[in-house]
Image (cartoon, rainbow, N blue to C red; front, side, top):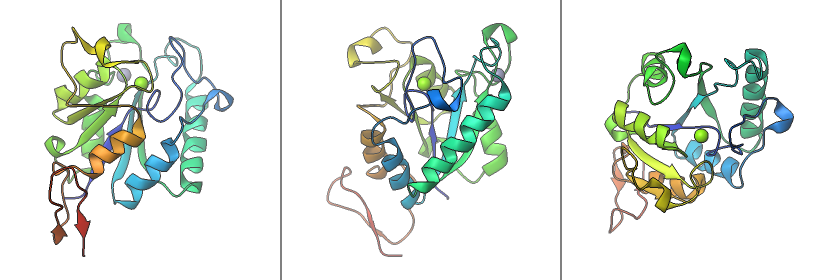
Length: 205
Ligand SMILES: [Mg+2]
Ligand SMILES: [Zn+2]
């Protein structure tokens, strides 16, 4: 089983603007340690897939062309720092468009499954910064990690949410520690397991 990890974009990889979006590349900024985290996941053989709602397109705030350009530059920057984003899936719609891809719906995950296959959602993590992300993860059946580097700022805010995340982490870097140390993630064979589940596996392959 090949390893895969799903990540939300804004508030996880890049800066979250409350009620707004990175409308052009100049407005996009990587969160601290985000590129380093992506590099670590890449080096650990995770295929990184971004699943992101970008309703600003449907609202006419920026074009698909802009979004594609942002994606291109984001991937280039990540590559320069030693990481690799395998795929990026966006929902450009807003609620009233009634699409099947806007999180918490699972259309984008299904698309990734169709394109990439060979993984098990139950053994996969989805990292997001909002209640909608956690719901989406639960709807498709992944493990969920809420990061506090975007829309949600504290654990307290999750009280009253429809679903609770499986883990809460300060940012993508801490989330990547959870992922890399997890026994849930599909392990390659010939791994030496550490003395406790939170100790990283050491592989001899
Ligand atoms: Mg987000
Ligand atoms: Zn959509």
